[in-house]
Image 1 (cartoon, helix red, strand yellow):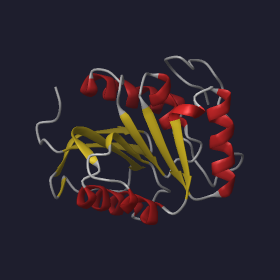
Image 2: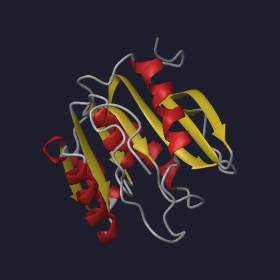
Image 3: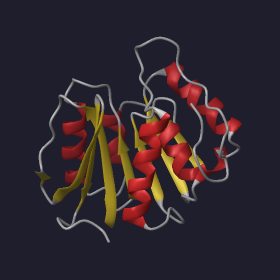
Image 4: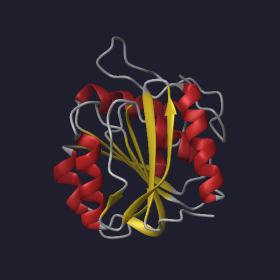
Amino acid sequence: MRVIAGTSRGRRLSAFAGSDVRPTPDRVREALFSILQSKLGSFAGIRVLDLFAGSGALAIEALSRGADSACLVEQAAESVNLIRENLERCRIGSMANLIKGDAWHVLPTFSAGSFDLVFVDPPYGQGLAGRALVEAESLKLLSADGILCAETGSGESLPETVGQLHRIDQRRYGSIMLNFYSYSPEGLT
């Protein structure tokens, strides 16, 4: 696993051994960030939330591409240690706020409009992505022109609309489904 683009391009990220945690593969991350680039225009100045951060690869990629800051939320101690290692390896730790805690307890601590980009990449098949969508929408965590990207297994389905959040795009990559949401049903230009 490596950083694909930006200031940390090419740096190898530590990953987990075994099959309990499945980091987003490089090819899917590359496609994801290409889609986000086309929707956002630039990562410059954006504020990122990486919920269920795992290895931290999604937030690290966004920071490498110019995001202003990233908040990474992860509960597992092993994952938190791995994220710290990866942030140090990429020399971007000062731009990141790593919170060890349960997502459902951490989310209400953020104020409305806190983030321009939210990554939701929980363990598959447990309904966590859908719950995170509901929580993010009820707390209004996204800025007015923000994007939430929820990664699920391709067999899982998420609703088209959650409150004022509308799915603006959906892409399948093998067994992975990427779902993009914003407040505007037309999406971003």
